[in-house]
Length: 104
Image (cartoon, rainbow, N blue to C red; front, top):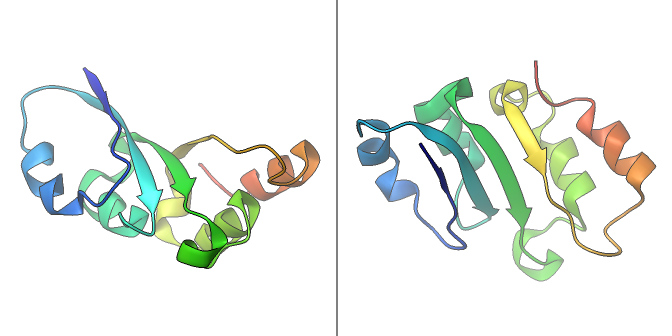
């Protein structure tokens, strides 16, 4: 199987990727260029999602914790998420607390 990394916009490929005959283990989602909501509509909980959030000036989110809070309550929040954060993007305790709203 594969894990797909893309730093840019690639949701226009999701339908074709979903039809492939190989296992897709996970997708890196670079917000705001690619929508995790669109990915979830097509792949559901069959894959692991790794969200990377662009700087605040582009994404509108101060850090990964505020992005996670944005996902809470949406269907995609029930998927499996791996979190990758950057230096000075909040404390571990804050990130763990926010992440508690993710996954099933």
